[in-house]
Image (cartoon, rainbow, N blue to C red; front, side):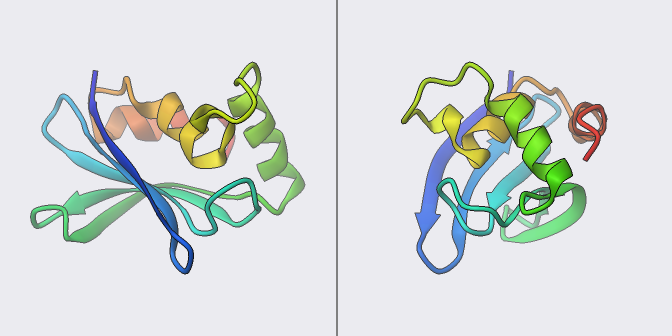
Length: 113
């Protein structure tokens, strides 16, 4: 299982969380608005000591009907007020057991995003 870093929230930039996968790759899961608002969720690989993003593995617009439906599936059963009930927390929960970036891509592709 990957090592999940801390959740960081910036009122101007949104929220993000870094995950170190078993393969040694690092990914950045981000929500450009943070909280429960719409916006975009994305996952990208990290390069150069985690300072620059690499390949985008997943992106989802939460302001579309498709995005809202996928978010509904990701947060089903999440306790109210928990991190898992947020878009960022739900996506982190969905991919934290992936072993590699390819696994993340496949798992997110199965969401239909």
